[in-house]
Image 1 (tube, rainbow, N blue to C red):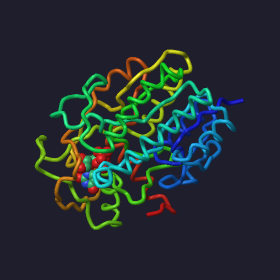
Image 2: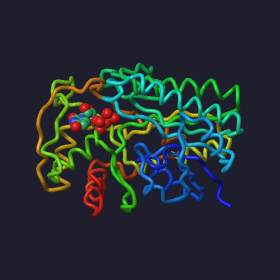
Image 3: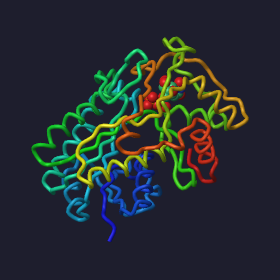
Image 4: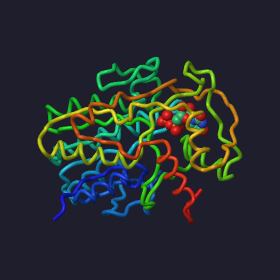
Length: 328
Ligand code: UDP
């Protein structure tokens, strides 16, 4: 029988892609999701448990029912802008939810934990290439809440024997190249889907958040990584834990940053259409540049992000956004 893995946030954008990758690798992903931002129809590779990380009993029940060999923890609030407006919610839900989950894992004897952290834990570092060793100085509540959970994991390891892999994601983009799942946030706040909505005429324009950053063209620079590559890293991280190779922290980026203007230009090449753009103010909490050095995950996990070109990420997102029945 396939080994089960509990995937919190398994009905969400990244979690669902991870479920697909887990199933491909021979695991049975059990999606645990409260469906506030996730979609039941994105859960295709295993059962859906509708539960909430703020409700400890629902976590205990899921762990008792399924006895997973590991937990992959994706479920979280994840919007930088929103976290600046309502920081308390981010601290309560992200940190409180993770604490409930870790305590439930400790009680149930779950020994392997893969955590979705973020490059937002680094803050604004003057454009240096970020490595796993770069000091973390978050400038928004989202990054702050994720950094707190990284600390929690380091404390739970020795006390409860929970081994962990921490992945610090850079900017996740694209959709399943086979078209089974894709990005679908309500409301949408991310650059690439908003840009493609503007291209398709579903929105009047894309607003560029700031053109006065200390970057080559004045717009923010991010390191974009394809969601399918990111999902593959999770299977490698899980395997590392199951092989008993111990804790690890890995940045998941490509080592190459693109400005908002460069993303817009790439979109024009992929779609053959102009992006209607208006220039707006900076968005609170945004760092000027966040780019990963990206060598450790390759060296230690054998991670090879093959899909993470702007052309493929935008192309796959464009194909997904044009699927019939895609909700707006
Ligand atoms: N961005 C933008 N207009 C938008 C949405 C995002 O200019 O409507 C910029 C944002 O300032 C950031 C980059 O695009 O520099 C990526 O933002 P996104 O929200 O996609 O991801 P984040 O970096 O917040 O995780």
